[in-house]
Length: 153
Image (cartoon, rainbow, N blue to C red; front, side, top):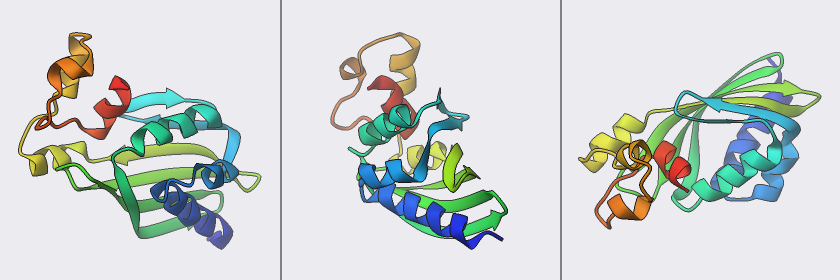
């Protein structure tokens, strides 16, 4: 187990949750590769930081639940706590390190739990499907999952 990478991973998740983007950038390799089944792939630190900044408008904090490490890889389980009706979204990041920096981020989060908590379906998918501006479908009571929120911005 690599305790340095574990500590870095936890500090990175905390910095994201605290919206300390300058600190976040110090943890990332310049050519960081971000991927997720539900989000666009990004291949540079500045692109990834930009996406985190956009997402930060709904983020209250991150709450780390558990961290697992093996050599240059860390898996971190945490709650992505939002100020939306979805509340806390269980999330997992599989991080790969190179030269002490995060070189790759693979994110899995459970958006459907947020939709169930909000008791409504995400309207962002409809906006994306019909290529409508988000304002056409998003009212004060509308729910948009984090994946659609990023795609619509």
